[in-house]
Length: 316
Image 1 (cartoon, one colour):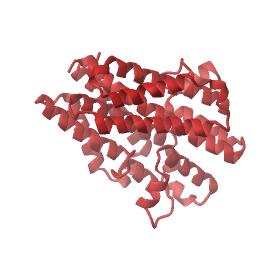
Image 2 (spheres, rainbow, N blue to C red):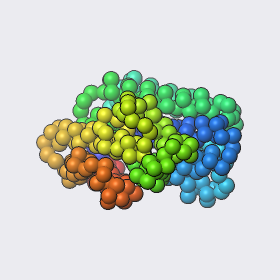
Image 3 (cartoon, rainbow, N blue to C red):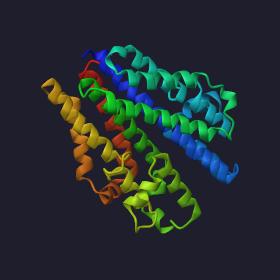
């Protein structure tokens, strides 16, 4: 496979995953606004959405003061924001179009229709009362993309690169969401964990990572605690957005890719090392060595893996 084809499939998946992640973070912030009626805590949630997505510096430079309308517009529609939903969906479509003959009709239709329908939306029409429905639509379209990919694409090297893109992006998002509010997940938080503010922050983290209900299934008899939430989102590989789950997939796909090409590249060994670290680590070890340091290191290693992958397979 040509490097530019592998790159297009990789980034096609990364951009669609990112669009859904942005929509989910905005949904959490908007829910907080509806409950808190514009209090300081709700503004903080919009600020968290900017920080978790890496959009804070660009937003401050272009808009400045944090407001629900400003954040929504910047993170969904702004053409100058490289992580806005608009840019993500457009870039996903452009990457898919460059490999149009290498993907299925169902996958192309899911990607292309999403972009066409999104491009027809007037940003001014997305008022606060319409925002939840619109964010839900973005998430549903991402699920449609993922379903078409999993159910129609041949399990060849193109599929492997698209899977790597999806889970590298997902792991990055989970780590950033946790790292943005890591102090909320420190063990000391459990001592004061009966407070409404702690519950609000913990619930927001779980919602941002689609884990609120599944947390209850994973810990049916335990109350909501910082330790359990951190463990759930970092080390529990049955949680689809945990770091362990993402790298379980990445490690499996790396093995498939090595077998497909008949040899291992350095990036695939890097993925195996990250997965091995997650397998051999316990949550108490992470706390002892520093949760923030662990998450910062993970983000760096995840980015390094992506960069090395692009070098090993000659991404254009």
